Image 1 (cartoon, helix red, strand yellow):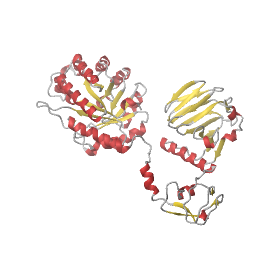
Image 2 (tube, one colour):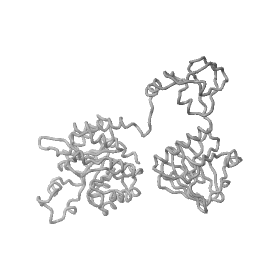
Image 3 (cartoon, rainbow, N blue to C red):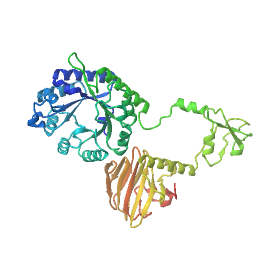
Image 4 (spheres, rainbow, N blue to C red):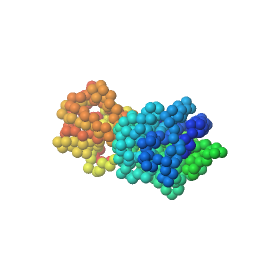
Length: 498
């Protein structure tokens, strides 16, 4: 995903700003005021049509064809549009425009519009999409009325042709009834297109703030609404917001973001920890225990309240090794001991974390696998250096899956018998291949030939496939002599199943 789109609020000028530069400037000023008041990233969006070619000659001047009178009555020339684009930038806002024909894509470029928007009605207009892709601008595409097949085609075409892509869930009903919003479908888009920013373009009633909160909760990273300013002569339609309604809409989105959290991690507060501790059972001595004695289950009992720093029943039951008393304890006294994880518990924790990443990535490996935990500097340093290798097939050809936890690296090595290709399935991966740093994103492949020195690391964690010729356990030659001197089995733990 690209940060240009994150938490961006796009205001589309309602009804083509009435074809008035003065009124357009009034709308830009109102949007800028909202951006300052709420401290949000804001964009103003225009619509461009080259009317002399966009409207068929026989349709020009007709008032019995929908939209024609409105388009013709709000005509502006290039100089007038330039005033609006420059005013948008001067206000510190992002400029966005929707071109409805190829000539208008050229106008976007001529005016320096920063982002091009694809309207829902244009999302299957392939001549126009090709022209937009050639413009080299970030693109936002709306998907009102499109099937999942149409959206797949749109995303496939655009995401490798433009520098940044956002796709907007949209329902082209004006205004949209509450039961028609289909926000679960937008959540499906978030899962289906993890490499694209997903947003929501709304047409609900302008005083409705519930829908935007649901949109944010379902994963929308940018939001769009029709926006205008009422005057004695100008009124707004049933799906366009005035500044007061827009302020309430932004505030609702901000509340939803606060409720959803700053990221997708769970941040446990000190208050939450203290609250749980009050209800947890602590470990107490059933009998007098002398310093140096093994502490077994027969020597203790569990009860509340548990004091800060006291050994809990959960910690005591988690580890298989006996505890050794660090000091004397009297009968009924609380135990303050530090649990030391044994290798079994360390391996179990590693496997749980690796499986968790597979679950999050939506990757199912089946049961006919074997598992290797590579820990080049010992299992205690596994979360710094190492990886989990899942051996799926090893015949004349080989298929493995490598799971790396956040912040892990794998040291420099090469193979003399094996040639391999990395195929990143999920997460991020940086490969040092003969001194060249190569950053892979999901879907990317990288060939590592025989005798090529390589290492790799991940920032957020990753899962990638390694497709190769037959794998031989002794065919890894490490640059670090301390690793090279080891028997391969000294730096691996083999697990038969999860």
